[in-house]
Length: 236
Image 1 (cartoon, rainbow, N blue to C red):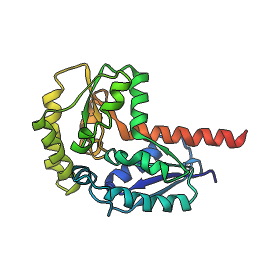
Image 2: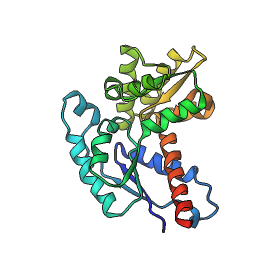
Image 3: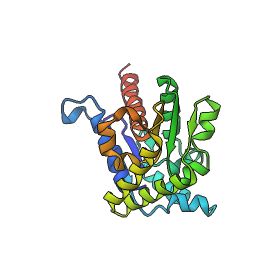
């Protein structure tokens, strides 16, 4: 077996399942044996990333580093984290492991550059927005972007937390209000930079896929490309 893709998940559990589902759907397999081996650690007791960033503590880092060791012990070939806000600690986690980690933010930046998208509106947790995880990289790479107003950002966060609490319809309603408010600008695409948001907007994405850039999907496609390249290298 070629080395598996490792998923450091649990942030939240449904987003982890979505990442696994996207690996399956984006893999050109014709039978079980052609699918990509995946080892997933989904232990959801990692502290809330947004609250920890607001409170200036590193509680999620210590838990993520602990669960990273499980993936290392399983000898995975690369590690992905299907949580945008957790990438606040990406570099520190990479320093704690010899295993290659693939960044959701780098994956997104490269896609937007290659696609020549005019501008993106970043939909993410307030912590992802406040720490400039995407904005700093977009500025460096001359990518035009906008972020929601304070009022609209509050709705985004409400929607995310309602989804995590199982209040799906309320979550969809709140996020739809945000999309409706901003979609008048036809040149802007919505960057879904929280792994719950593609789940919340599932129906809208199906109806108008051209409006959205799904960061989770881009991370998964990069991980699949890593796996396919490693197969080619091992066969050489």
